[in-house]
Length: 432
Image (cartoon, rainbow, N blue to C red):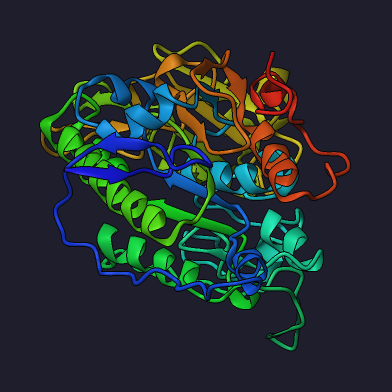
C-alpha cells in the first residue's frame, strides 16, 4: 500500500503495509475567494518535535531487515550511534537524554538508589517524589516555562511535579507538562501511538509542540531471551509497525514532524555460567547490596568498611571493584552522594549477583562499561530540520537535550555536559 510518511517536511511517499485501517480524516474545506489565503495560514501546522525512545534498541537492530519504517527514516535522514552515560541503565540515561547532564550530576544514579538525606527510603522505578528528580531540569519543564506546550508519554520522570518541595510529607508547587500519562506497562504500543495522535489532533491552541513516546518491548525481550533472539526480533518488528502506524496518522493530519529516535542503552548476552556470586567474595552481613546485575553497588554495614575493602579491592576474574572516589574518571561517576561506597563492574556479558543462580538461564543485560560497543544506543533523526542521508560519528548521549533545545527554539542551556556540536553538520540549514 502506498502511503505518506512523515520522513521530511514535504511528507515524502513511501511503501509500507499497515495492520489497521486509518480513520477517515476529512480535508479542511477552504472557501473560494480572497479568504482562502488567510484560512490556509490559520490551518498551517507548525512542526512538532517528537522524541521516541525504544528502550534497549541497539544500532545493529536496524540491519536485520525487520524495520522498514525505522530503516527508511535512517536512510533518508540522519543515523548514528550513541554512547550512553554510565551506568548504562534505563532511568539514569532517560534522565540524561532530557537534561543534558550525566547521572552523577542529575542525581538519578541508578534504577535503584538510596540517599543519605533520607536513608530510610529507597528510590525505585516507581518513584515520582520530586525530591529524587529536582537536581536537573528536564526539557519539558524548560519548554513549559518558555510557553511551549509539551506532552511526554511514559518518559521516566514525566509524572513528577518537577521542582516541588516536600512539607510535612506533602508536595507543594512544581511544574508538570501540559499533558502526561503515568506509566502503565499494560498499555499496548498501538494505544501509546493513538494517545500521541489524539494530542496532535487538537487545535493549535492546545496542541503540544514537544511530544515523547516510549516503548519498552525490545528491552523486555532482550532481558528475557538475549539480543540475538527471535523474541527480540519480534519486539523490534512490533515497535516498527507501531511507528509505521503513527507515520500514517501524521501524514493524514498534514503534521510536519522532526522525529528523533533514541535508545537509552544497548544489550549484551548473558548466561548462568557467567555469574559472579557476591556471597563467595564477602560475608552477606558485611554490606547492603543496593543494585546487582551488570554491576553491584554496595554500602558497608557499620564498622565493616575495611572488611568489604579487603574482600573486593583486589583483582577478580571478570570483575573490577573500586571505592566510589576511585572509580575511573572516564565514567564521570562517583561524586554524587547517592552513589554507594563501593562499585563492582562486571565484564560485558557477565553478571555479579548476590548468590549463584539456582537454575540455568540465557538472557541479556545492560549497565556495563558505557564505552563497550554492545551498550551503544540507536539514534535516528528525520524531518524538515535535518539533512538527508547523513551518518554521524559515535557521540555521547548528553548531546541529545541540546539538540532538542535547538529544535524547540530554546536557549542552549547553562553548564550542561553536552552540546549540539555533533549535529551541526547535519542540520538542514547548516549541512554542507
